[in-house]
Image (cartoon, rainbow, N blue to C red; front, side):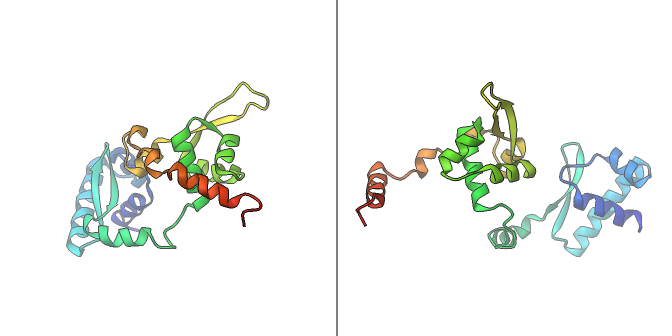
Length: 186
C-alpha cells in the first residue's frame, strides 16, 4: 500500500486529531514528508469532490464530513441503520445527565426498570463514567456524563442542557393519567 493510502486509512479510523509527529512515526517517514502527503491528500479530495474534508484541528489532523453533505447526513442519522444507542440507553443517559452524580439504583428508580445494562452500554460507549464510590453498604458507584457526551451534543457544559421543566407535562395531566391507571377505573 502506498503512503498516501496508508495515511488516509489512519485518518479514517481515528477518533481524535492525530499530530503530524505521530503520523510520521506510524508511516515511518519524516514529518516534512507527512506534511507533503497531507497537502496531496487534501488536494485529491478537493479535485474528486470528496464527501470528506481534511482539517488541522487541536494540534493534529482528522477527516470530517464535508459541510455540503449536511442534509444527507441529517437524513441518515434518523434512519434505523444509523441508530447506535437504544431508547433505553438514551433514556438512561438523560437521567444521568440531569440528575448526576447518580447511582445505578437511583437511575432504575427514576426509570421504573432495571438500568444496569443501559449504564454498562453507556460506559462502554464513553458517555458516562464512574465518578466515585459511596460509603454505603456495597459501596455503590455513582455516575456522571463525560466530555464525550458534551462533545457529541455540541455543548460546552451541562449548564447548556435545556431546562427539564420544558419537557415535563403539567401536574393536572399527570394526575389524570395516574387516576386512569388506578384499579377500578378501567
